[in-house]
Length: 253
Ligand SMILES: [Zn+2]
Image (cartoon, rainbow, N blue to C red; front, side):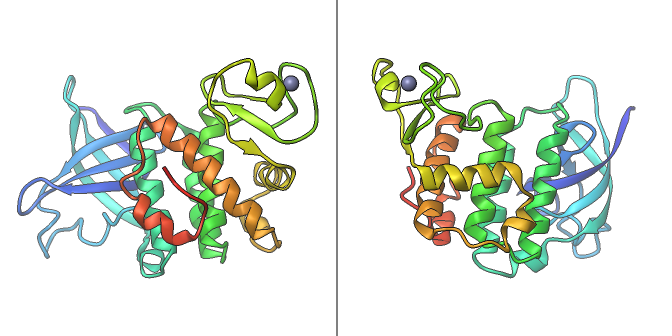
């Protein structure tokens, strides 16, 4: 039987039986893989402590042809997540990222850039990045990596460089209000201060942004826009949205 050996993040886990979990793993080698962790809920399990959501682990998963669920053979903890789960609202960011990735990523398709993004955001949170900024950083980058939230470089139709710009979510393009009006797609306005913040997000590592001051109003408005785009991309709002509201961003769904 082929076994996948890979570094991975645990995204989610659900009870399968009284003693076992089904775990959703974001593996570096093969993207999202779901597996049964037999006996993992027992206090004596060798998996104990290694399967907290957003922990980084080295796993071996036995995969069977034609079956969606593999079997977790081993899980070695590389970096636990209990330090962040013990802090609020950092824990809300972890919940939001786990659900988003579980829903956004296709199974069995490696996504190296998204994998590194998750590692970078966790490192940023540990380095003291404000949780709302970390959440905006994660969601804006994830959407950009999936082609729906491009870097704003003026109106794609007429080339106008000013603000506001509106997002044509279906096309993944920014347009000025005059051009976007001709296309009846939804759009929220990206103002100049929001665009400066987004530009910083797309240019700088999260840890270095954490040392800078950003206007809270722009961060809050950008969080609302990014969340709107994320919920539309995923097809429905996040179940973890009530927790994410504690980050203090703008209105959600
Ligand atoms: Zn235009």
